[in-house]
Image 1 (cartoon, rainbow, N blue to C red):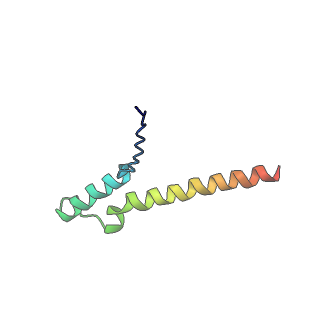
Image 2 (image 1 turned 120 degrees about the vertical axis):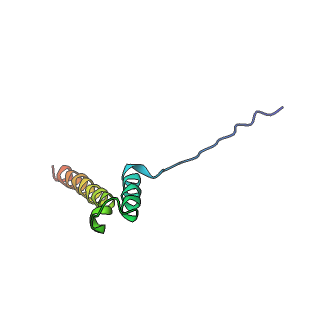
Image 3 (image 1 turned 90 degrees about the vertical axis):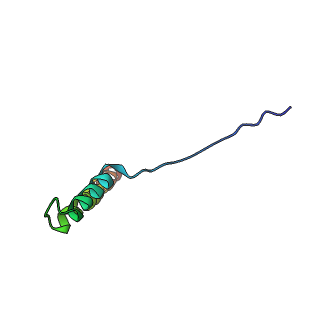
Length: 69
């Protein structure tokens, strides 16, 4: 009799908070519940993107600073 190990590796990224908020804003905009400009309806996407870029730049700055020491 052999012992077989079943390795199941599943990764689920999901939609996330900003994605859900964007979908909610789009639905509200298309149902005429909110009268915002599209730039604000899609703002959770670009705000998340900008925050990600800032965090990345911060880590790169720290890495460059540490390499100089």
